[in-house]
Amino acid sequence: IIYWYVKKALYLISMEIVVNSLSTPILVNILATTFAVIGILQIELFYLDESIQNMEVYGNSFYSFKQGPTHNIQLNSFGDFRPESAQYKWFSKELKSVDRNLTPWLTVTLHCPIYNTFKWHRRDQQSVLARKYLEDMMYEQSVNFVLSGHLHAYMRTEPVFKGKLDKKGPIHIILGNGGRQANSPYYNKERPEEWVAVRDHTTYGYGTLDFV
Image (cartoon, rainbow, N blue to C red; front, side, top):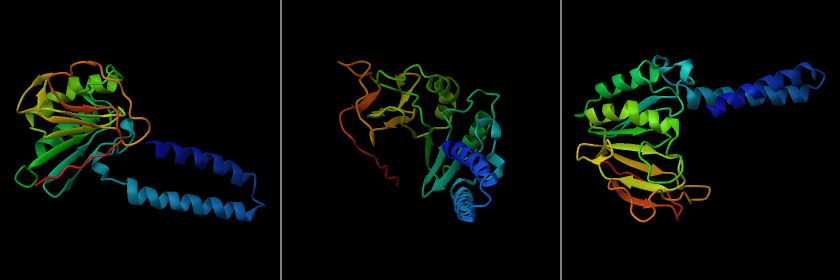
C-alpha cells in the first residue's frame, strides 16, 4: 500500500520536473530509468491474480499462497471486514476452498492482532472488527495459527475462541519484536489472561514455524 502511494507521488513530482527540465537530458534519463525499475518491481513483486483484486480495499491487498503442507491466507487489517465487503466474501470463499488433505495446516496473517495481552492497541477498530466478523469463520474452518504484529512484543496463546480456552480454536501469535523498541507494557501486569501461553516485552527476536 505504502509502495503504491510513494510510487504515485514520485510519478507526479517527476512529471512536473520533466516538463520543466526538458533541456536536461541526463535528468530525464535518470527519471526514466528509475520508473522503469519501479515498474519492473511492481510486476515481479506486487502483481497477483486479477480475480482477487479489489480497488476499494487497496487493490490486491488480500491473497493466499500454498507452501509445502500449508495454506496461508493474508488479510488486510486496514481494509473492510464487514460481511458485505469484498475482503470478507473472498475470505469466506477461500477458507471453504482449503483442501486439508493437500494442505493440512491453515494459517491466517493480518497486521493487527485479534487477541492482545498488552496495554496498547486494545481498542483499535481493526482488531475489534476482525474479532467480531472473522473469529467465527476461523473457528468453523479450523484455522491453526493466526499471525500478527502491530505490538512491539511477543505473545503466543493457547488454542482460544471467544476469549475462552478451546482445543478447537486457533493459536494466536503476535510477533512484533523484530525492530524498534520492544517495550509494549502488559494490560494485566501481575497475571496474564488465561489464554496466554507465553508473553514477553523485553527482548528483540524473530520466530519460525516448522510444519510437518
